Length: 119
Image 1: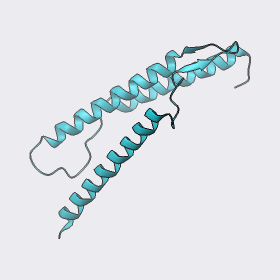
Image 2: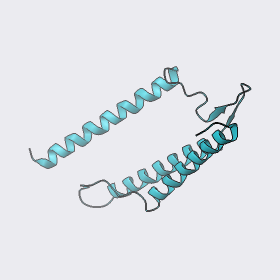
Image 3: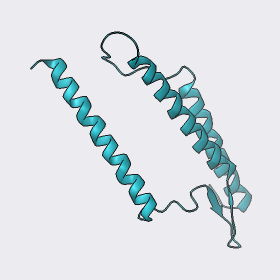
Image 4: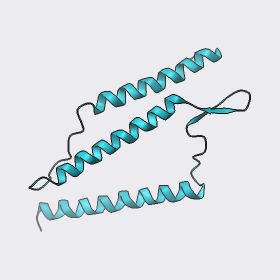
């Protein structure tokens, strides 16, 4: 048994582990053990809540980024030869995530200032 076989078995084990983890998290979310209600909303002082656009854009950018990375990975799997390294993320990937997180933090900071709290 060579390194290629060991790497293949480790890859299979890692895929199985991550798949089981995803199934467990999805199951716990569906049964209510992981609380997802209000994940995109912000509670107000009067008891109401509304969807924060910063949180929504953060979630959308994250999901789009994951989709593009999966697409890049699948394209790399379709290439001839053995895949020995993880594919490079798309070129704008770091800048997009940085901008998205900056928008989220700026909105959070702005709301805190608007309430009169010190950040």
